[in-house]
Length: 250
Image (cartoon, rainbow, N blue to C red; front, side, top):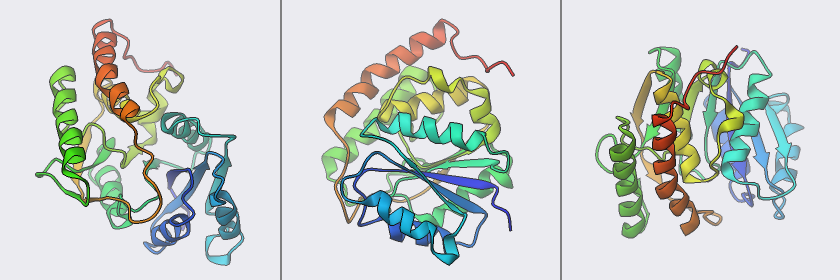
């Protein structure tokens, strides 16, 4: 079975998780290949991926992009999107974390929303049916939840989890976006991509998922990421008023 999907997983110091997350995805027996984008992890994450590339069950289905340092989540995904779009076999392109906060068991549900139900973007949503977050400090839950409320208020998007990082795109969405114009790197990157797809008129579905805080490794979150999101949303709204969001010319 030829894979029609690529799951992009950015990594920085994920040696505790990377082998297990890759194995769990392939255990789904779905049409999914994996692209790991490693930002120079000093803990040897990339070396583990290279080992797995040589193992019989994974040969030809694990790809690795190594970058020189921590260049930001948004730039990692943009690089991955461009890589995927250069390969016509990939019709569905995923964003996914390496730390099991996004359950591999939900990958087929996002895929089905796009492949079977005809949506252009499927979002693994923590907030579409209440608050489905496990093992986060209450302060972080409230910050994330109300940040999404704030984004909805400012942008007018009918999306409950505006900062979600677990997504499946039909390739047509990414082909329509001017990827070089995407400016943000952290939480605001996730908002900007959703807002761009929304403004371009693509069909979006939120798929309810349970987000589980990482058990192994160290979180990469910082206060600066939240600040970028809070102020970035205002800039996105202003860009919208000025008519920035137009489909890329083919």
